[in-house]
Amino acid sequence: MKLVTKEQWDKLSPRSQGYVCYLQGNRPGSELKGIVNPYFKHTKQHRDFYEGEYDAVIETVESEG
Image (tube, rainbow, N blue to C red; front, top):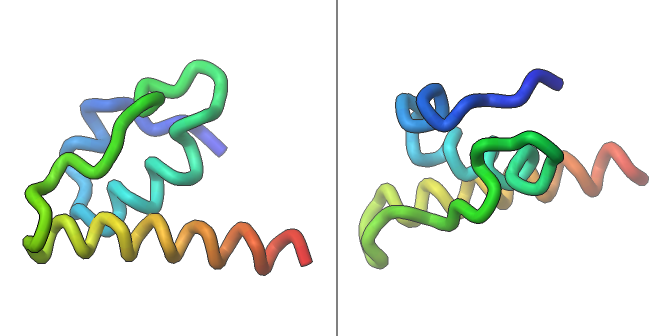
């Protein structure tokens, strides 16, 4: 999987940002290392970011089992 740059990540929807951040944030060479949900709590964007992360978790678990 090709790593997404920070510039590319900035252009994604909040849900896609969460998804990509979960999958690539800890990969060697990732520009997304250390990024956490950048949106204000109790906003749709904040919730969407976490839903994207959740989608990535589910996909990861399903692919392992």
